[in-house]
Length: 449
Image (cartoon, rainbow, N blue to C red; front, side, top):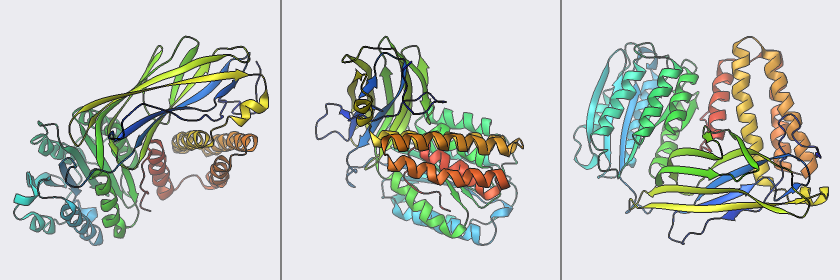
């Protein structure tokens, strides 16, 4: 096999490709673009390549035409939320409500040992006592987190039948779920079932006492956002960031399908969860936000081909519902690659952005794996894993003169050394979990630390 100095352990030949865009009118809010890590592959050898299926969300919705928001605020009021935490939570909730329009729908749920619907789902313009209900939230009791989310979803379901709104639960918690279902797997299953209904859950973990595995799994499986907020003073800012996404949804019910011809074997998604069946792959997203990019990465194995030849690598389609008018649109794109025995030709085809996206996701996955290893008392293995990925990235950055990849590698190296010395403390573990998910989901906002 002819090889170049790339990801030897991952067997991923990371080089760039120019984007191939879908045919779409200027009025369409989304553009599908199919990139590959290199336009030219080495000839006469089995190679691995990385395909990027990108969705460019080209415009922000006009305020007068944006879809209505169906929002449930689910707020932890257990005893640990006392003092400044609950005060800032009230402030953030009030700010969120004031950002909504009169035709948007709001419900407020507070939970401790019990779950209480303070404001049943209703139009903001007709709601009475809305702000007063928020101001009366006080800390007490334990943490029935699962029940709080379920109650929020029940309120959303009252207005979900017309399929026009953006359905979102925003969950705030600072503690461990200790009433009702409380494991990451149970909350993950809840999140997945809600996504199937068109409901996303964004989770805001406050302080150092909450279960980041549970909160991250719930957000990930429902295609929501996740935040780690160490200081309660940051809550209003984080709520504003989240509302910015909610108010800028331009597409919903997004299904990406990729077909691979004979000779191209799909191996796995990188970063995101997706399904591969034979020569087909599929991934589902709940919504797309205006002005942002969402993408999926798939690693494939390509059969040998002669120098100078060309083959199709993949065809992709995306089906989505325009949030402004409810119209379903399908976009398609395809990608071809060439083969060469000239090393310089292969290297010169590098797409540095695809390399950087892949590198960031490889490290995000490595961070999650490192958390599991540290939890088992194997911090040396966790450190070695990140160092291994760092070395692989540095090789790519050097070979292709990719400063973005080199920057990612340079930032990861000291983290690996710190893990070897100290492991991961509570704050670092929460930060790792949140940052990993934000990279994998292409979440635009920060963790709030």
